[in-house]
Length: 154
Image 1 (cartoon, one colour):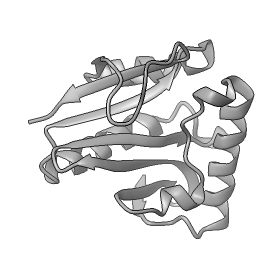
Image 2: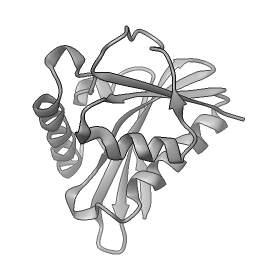
Image 3: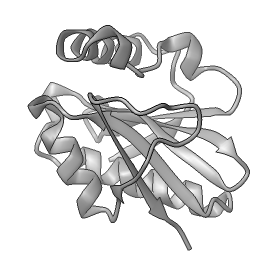
Image 4: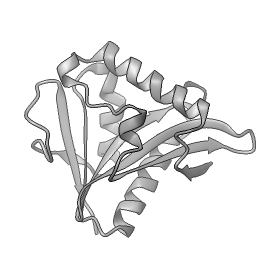
């Protein structure tokens, strides 16, 4: 698997992000959707990666890091393509994001995900990678439809 930074202009990547947004709108109340669109993913403080299966060059998934402050980052837009599910894409991306966060000197990496059954696999994934539930962070406020998680780095 190859992980590439900055591929938001690729049509297949754009479609995966649009699929992600459609699913978020189908599974969560509007006030609880914190998924980012293409413009936000290209904004300041954001770094985006896509994962590609080799040698087929098939899009496997994506993930992003948002810098909240010089010591704290947030995982955003984690998504595995339907064709690549069950192949370890999400774990590989989380490991990549953890590595980048550590290299940047972050002491903490956090995320927000949903409480609905749809997000159960995501919550299990993050727990396997050492994330634990925490209070809202950054600009988030308490939300009964959100689970906030964090991991201390270093």
